Length: 449
Image (cartoon, rainbow, N blue to C red; front, side, top):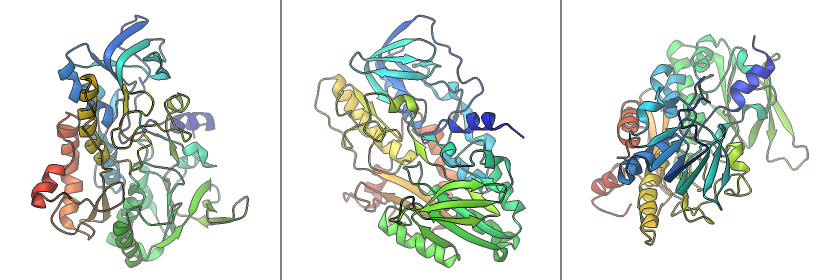
């Protein structure tokens, strides 16, 4: 059994974003031992947004002019973990060496940014380097805060407690499904922004499918406790998902936020956010299986910088992705305060806008790119079933295919299972994929949506 201090350090600072990077050699560096380095463009963070933008600008600016600051040695495609948790894929296939995805024209500073001085166009790293820039892209993602739930992350050392959101816990999900005998299967969604807001439901539907396949579903009482007041942010898909849950016999409790896990008693306690009382009323559920989606937040070093809003997120114009105070700084992905779901699809669409706008700023021209909030979430609802949600800032559908994507579809299942991973590795990370806007135009005969 691991000690509490070891467990806490292992889980409380798991790197995130839409893509996470984890390595035991996380804090070594290949950077020069010079105290100061200077670049035309510095990219902070080697997640999907950082790698994508490095690929777009590395060759354009020429070797030696672009640097990416990232301490981790492995790059993970985290959406893959939904399928790993469902017992359909192997976790080993979700990661690749960081060195293999960083463009050859980009200098990799294998280090961690610890502070920002935007008035001086400088960042400082953990290994004592001062890196200056003319332009900077911040793509630091968000981190998992398991430690904010009492009893976690220690409860992950006990049977039945799992989470698809961490490399360290995703393989516990299929094991919890296999070991399940009878009782409550509880699935949670926290009271903070999270990456891939549909993932807490995907694991629930895959667990339901597995239980039916092996003949254990009648022994399981499925409970979905979400801190939200709706099933999903976009109304069209929320209505369909509520029907899916109803048809599967899943009890849905809105505005229930997980605050404690007692792994000895196998109980999970939730606060009722709708309660007018202080402290808020709580309710406790026994569990046989508990899938935890943790609260999430931006990295502390970003939260402490002058670049963020009161909630700790990078403050950018939601349409141009340019920082509201520092015009030579842009943001992309989960760490920004852009009001859309945090997904790889959002990053793909943002990357095209950012490419245009950063190029324009470098040339002293007006910003031409306008992000419309496009994001996408393939909502797996069972084996061979998927709803492909696509929507904009106004939560209105912005669907690519010429049919109703709000209905469960086998085709969308194969898009998620077989197509999105190659698209990610071979197109997005190489800077070639900027979202499905062109296909949408073709499929809808050139109409604006």
